[in-house]
Length: 75
Image 1 (tube, rainbow, N blue to C red):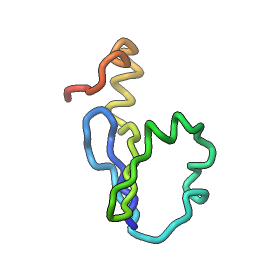
Image 2: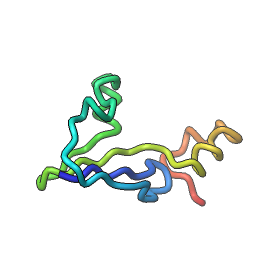
Image 3: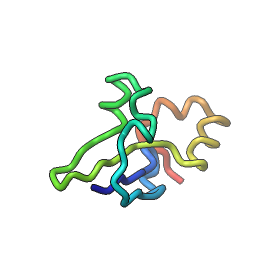
Image 4: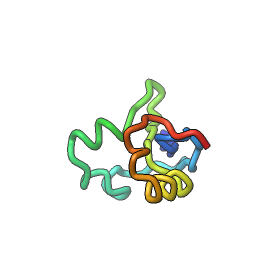
């Protein structure tokens, strides 16, 4: 099982973890069910995909909070 991290806005691959890890060691237990459903998806091969926010999109959202209304940011 590989855990893939992607930016939810620009779809940039942020990284991947190829090691077998427990979700508790990654802090997923601190997410609400709604947050977990929104951020984490599982694929049939066992891979997990986590939707996070990259530094560039975070900076853009901090400077322009109205961008939160958009599903995808264009960079």
